[in-house]
Length: 328
Ligand SMILES: [Mn+2]
Image (cartoon, rainbow, N blue to C red):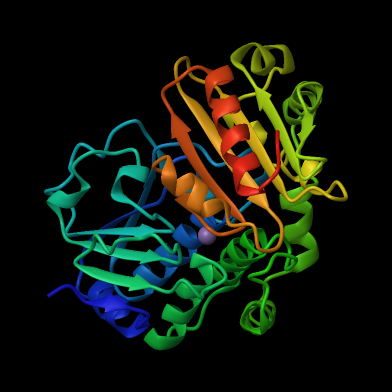
C-alpha cells in the first residue's frame, strides 16, 4: 500500500526514519522548487537526517541570494555514492519522476511532496495537496507537524516558494490559506521587502536583452486574446543570455489588457523546445500542456518537444486558438 494524501504527518514520519536523504526537484528549478528544497533540508537536519540537495540545473539568477543556496549541488548525474550512501529520496514540487533529469532515483524509497494536480503518486509515501498554494507551504506544514521551530532562513526560503508560486500573492491560488501561512513565515523572520528585492531587482543584463529579443517575435492572435512569442538559440547568443534568463519574459504579454493566454516557446538546446503557458481566469492551460506530455497548474503550465521551433509554435498557437474558440 502506498500512503497518499494530504497528511503531512506521514511525510514527517517517513523523513524522520531516514539517515541520509537526497533532496531534489524538477529541471530548471523555480522559486518554489529551490525554496522548498532548502527549507526541507533544514527540517531534515533538525530531525537528525543528513540532507543532500542535488539538482540537474542551476537556480535562475534571481534566486542566488537564498540562504543556503550554495549547498545545492548542481550536476549532470547523481552523486557517485548514490544509492549506497543514501536511504531516502525526497522529491519536492515534482509532478513526475521523469521531470527531475536523473535516472535511477527509484532505486531508493521516495518521499514525494507536491501540489501539482497531475502528480500520480510515484513515491513510497506521497504527500500531495493540490489545494496548497505552493510546495513550500506544504514543507511549512511539515515543520509544524514535526514540532520543529523554523529558523529565519527556513522561513525565508519557504516564503520565497510561496511568494513566487502565487505571483506575489496575485494569482488565483492566493487564497486566505496563502496569506495566513505568509503571516506565519513573516513572524518567523522572513522579510518580504528584502526577498522581493532578490527576486525582482536582481535581473541580469542578459535577461533584459533576451526580453527585447523575445518581444521582437511577439504576435497577438484571436482578436488579442492569445499572445505568442519565442526565443531561439541565436537570440540567446545575441543577448548573452542563458536558459535561466527566460523567467520573467512571459509575464509581459500576460499583463496586456485582453490577453487571456500566452504561449512562450524557448529553444536553448538544439532540437529541443520548451513551452511555457500562462492564462488568466477560467482558461485551463494545464489540459493543453498535458495533451503534449507536460503538466502544471490551470493558469501556469509547460511542456517540451523534440521538434523544430516553428513547428512547435504553430502547433501551440492553433491548439490554443481552438481552446479559445476563436480563429487564429
Ligand atoms: Mn509550485
